[in-house]
Amino acid sequence: MADLDILDAYRPLFYPRSIAVVGASSNPFKLGFHALLAAKSAGFAGEIFAVNPKAGEEIQGVKAFRRISDLPDNIDLFVYAIPDKMVVPAVREAVEKGGRAGVIFAGGFREVGPDGVKLQRALVEAAGRGGMKLIGPNCIGVVNTHVGLNATFAVPLGGIKKGGVSVVSQSGGVGMCIVSHLFDEGVGLGKFVSIGNRANVEFADMVEYLALDPDTSVICLFIEGIDDARQFLMRARKYARLKPVIAYNRGYTEKSSGVALSHTGSMASSEEVYRGAFRQAGIIQAESLVEMAVLAKCFSMGVRLEGNGVFMCTHTAGPAIVIADICERAGVRFPELEPKIAEAMREFLPPHSVPGNPLDMFAQAWTNSSLYLKATDLALRQKNIHCAVAVFQSGMGAGPAFPAREFSQLGHRYGKPTFLCLTAPQAFAKEMEEAQNQGVVTFNRAEKTGAAIVGLTRLLKESRVHDRKK
Image (cartoon, rainbow, N blue to C red; front, side, top):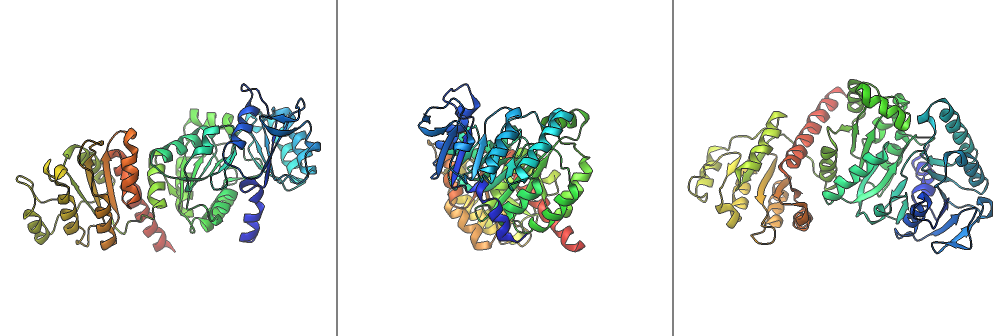
């Protein structure tokens, strides 16, 4: 299928001109209430319709119909907030009306056993008659922040910051966790897909589509199990070259694989199989949701490393020790400073501060933050140093601010990324956001800073191995 055909096939799902919420309700204790509220409160500019057999003229101020057959023709997206036994007939009706995409919240399909498997087959057959793309069943739904689309029952997702990181998650709950981590890091969301049981839209389809999607710059995947691993690997290998694809998967142990099977009907495989497959496809495997979020932040800011040499300076040793320990255990290096650079630092460092890497400049650097700039300017001249990390205790509005703009400019001057560990509560995220807006990759925890650097250096190592094998 040509690239334009792929984009066109999923336009009704991600860029619909109209939405019908089947099972819409004015009762806040019903899922259909929240689905309709989500659809109409996210800023969607197209038409929205409500469907309920007991409907009057309107539900929540939205024009209502008692039957799908009464709706206007060719509505793009149908959101089904109805019980499992009602879904297949409703999908048949929507296909007859020209519907091209659907989101199904209900469980009770292949994850519950043989009867559910039969029901899901009937669902796929019904959708296939009209080429309808289905997300779910057993899912939260779909979000596209770029057009105000919230086809879920989670109203707050409609208020998420717009950006370029798109998330595809087999588990709606883990998907929400990923979005929460991105939100905490100040990273904007592009598209969110709770893929659920994967009736007729698979991970391979989403990687293919999102790699071509102009509103997506980074793709994040949470995988419990893949049915057609060969198809996924073949397509992911092709499209992961276009954009960073980060995967996090679980379900290796006996208990967790049993939960995965009952959750979305997915049979997990061994950890080694997934690691090998991801490596072959050029997919970055995250070791945790935190690492996924920090790597997504780095990639969305265009950050790459050309080597594993790091310079770190601080006025408070503790967080720097944590970062150094995390990094060195993973093979990241803190090269010794060249004698001429160390000698140049002696001229401005405070008493008792010994030129080294990591460099502790004591409390004087908190009140005189220009010391960070002077030290980093010198260190980045070394060829075996590939990025700089500053550790700074936030004044939380009552103390000095870190010179993020000047620190970022140093990075640009030498063509090397700059990172800031700005230790502060999440309540002071504005300060972190301002530093980030200046081009410095900023985290409020030492562990996150270490995870970002480790992840980037691991990617560098794997990409070099991959290049040698070509």
